[in-house]
Length: 251
Image (cartoon, rainbow, N blue to C red; front, side):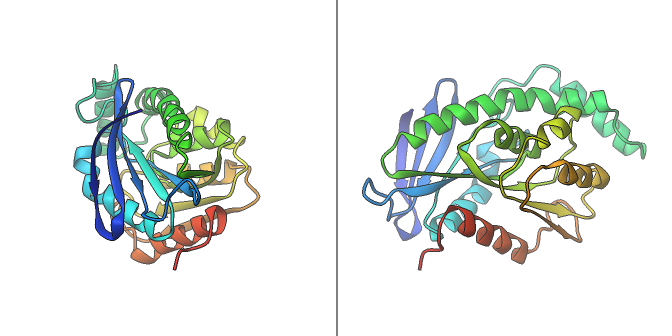
């Protein structure tokens, strides 16, 4: 991990931009983090296709909220986003998806697979590399949570990486068939957000995925409204979820 720049934000939170191999990211650590008082870590997922530059303002808000709880946070540039090379076939798959939705139909399973699975296949190993690097830092503790999207990315990480101890997932994208299978391997505590009127989400598919998770502790928070209409109290519920499973709220 090579740090490229550093700045201090509100409340003494340190923001460090970094590169690892051929991808980049940002690490935020609260002022209290040190080798003698290591803090839990939240992996902040993003929607596919946007990139850190476009998502930065929202990511900082989430990172500041995590720091208020005494957590560090990290986010990485998703494959195919920002200045990264587009994933092969993604543009055509996205066009096929939009075409199906615009005609009132349900996208075919192979269209969903072609759009989402290459992203998952690239993103999950990069998240694991990031975890290797960040958890090697003395100010970062062992407890790790995953927060946000893409839900297929979070599902695979939760299924295969035992370092993830809790996940707050956003049901805001279509779900590949393989993700449904992987959900049956997920046993960690889950908190899933679902916007009931999300125009870019198949509600029944999201409900089927939630049902497939093998976790004995899982909560579905479904609220009226579109993709960007998540109410503030829903975010507060997620914060309390991570406080229960990663550590107590600071202050």
